[in-house]
Image 1 (cartoon, rainbow, N blue to C red):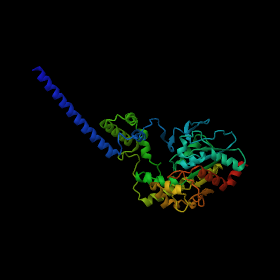
Image 2 (cartoon, helix red, strand yellow; image 1 turned 90 degrees about the horizontal axis):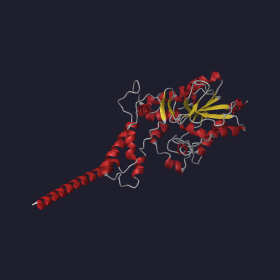
Image 3 (cartoon, helix red, strand yellow; image 1 turned 60 degrees about the horizontal axis):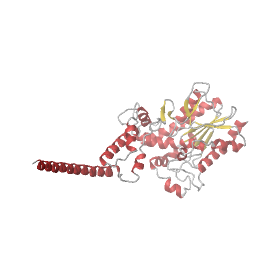
Image 4 (cartoon, one colour; image 1 turned 120 degrees about the horizontal axis):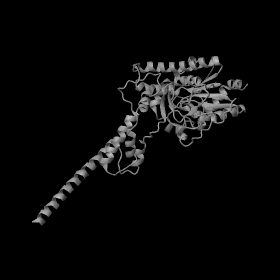
Length: 398
């Protein structure tokens, strides 16, 4: 009798075990299907962890919203004069500057930032010892050792950020002998893509709503997200939960909510009106820099930068054609509107239009599909800026 009861219990237990195994198997297959169709990935892929690793959240704050010039980087060099500042102000500084050196201040976006160092964005992570090639080129050109370059460019920066950065530097006591502003691309590409799409005013820093959103978040979800990024349990339901956590955290940190008014009034201008306003901001900001520097007898060189999206500006190499024309999100705006940036709008006595600097250059000078230059491109650009403004630099020497 007891043996019969025991057999029944064993059979019932086996039934429940098989039933639960079937349920688990069905759930696992369903979760694997959802993972494959939703995230285009399999937990059994050899590079599964590698694919997830791009969503790792570094909780160390690298960039922050600056109250005066939009955005600053924790990696920037601080300026500590006798006065009031202890702020992150320079992308790079002159490593061996002497007291009586001629101080050259570089302003602009990432092209200006990498021009000073002659390294591209991809090389920065591997080369933390910045090489001040622009200063070396300048000193070599004149056979001296009197020029020191201070690079206050802002990655992703655009006018009027250069103007405001100059005002802030002056306020905290930095006094350059000459200012070089390299711009043009960001003023149209970033404004007409990032800001216009987000209905931000054209005058705002690019993606200012996202910058505020990222800074305001405590990024608490990053801890949970990073746990799942680094692990693979091989159990589909656990991995599905993990991928949902990763995805939601990524959206929370990188995508700004559309219902939070970070600005007083959303932009309602049409695209042509927005283009016109962007050009005016570019010109007026440069002219404000000129008006500020002229009474101080500080030279001002405004450089209009080259890029691969301006038609007929360069005989593109095969590498440039295949790899570096693949970002129409920026490129289309440049192709349509870059000709609108005219020297007739600029006051500077030393406006240097280098849009066609590579008109006859067949070698590869670009480094990516945005606008950045490789070492050759940076060297050619530096040399042309100097040779085009030779008299101004000579006056500084004498």
